[in-house]
Image (cartoon, rainbow, N blue to C red; front, side):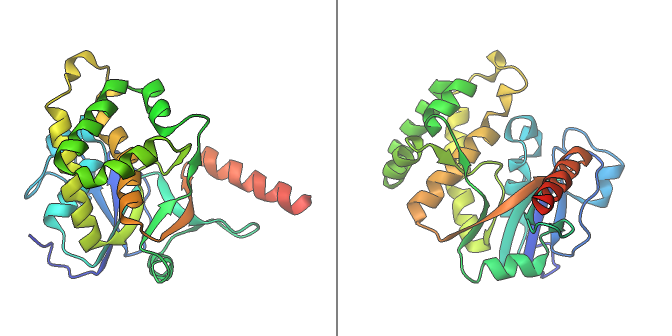
Length: 255
């Protein structure tokens, strides 16, 4: 199913509350969890509860309900994901904040297969970091699922789990054909994981398991596919974050 607009670039913005969004035509806000809580303000955006969707799973899948909806319902050549407060930015000291526009995505993809946020350095392995923050056995379930369903990804999984850095936030931009292939793999793994997990014992934070897991699995996908990656800065776009950036830029200029 196509949205009929024919735009070859779409950067999804996962939105769940009223907030400012960039006006550049490349951005495509999607109201997530619309099946659960329909709102008047959300009607100005696309909703993740039309066509083939998993909108009702938003408390557990987070921004992935927008990803699933776009996989099944949008037609374009390139696709990406940002959040209502998180955006890719060009971090140029002394200049006004520059949130990515379509030309910035296009320029980066001339020399890369995928755009990702800069890797986050960890004090422990990806596996141990997940285990310390969430439920260790869930990651063990995922390894078993991959071994059984797509064993060709097992070496990449094991490699990523032992690394001490990773891409987080589920933000990216890539070709839609690569995205479709990634989503087919990702959502198959997560659907199998659902059969192993009893969420009635998890608090509201830990119930977001599938969003957390997808952050790690994107790294596995990138590792296996050996994509050329272009890393970019991101910003959490609220008043406090902007103020911190302005102060940092001022200190660099003064020093």
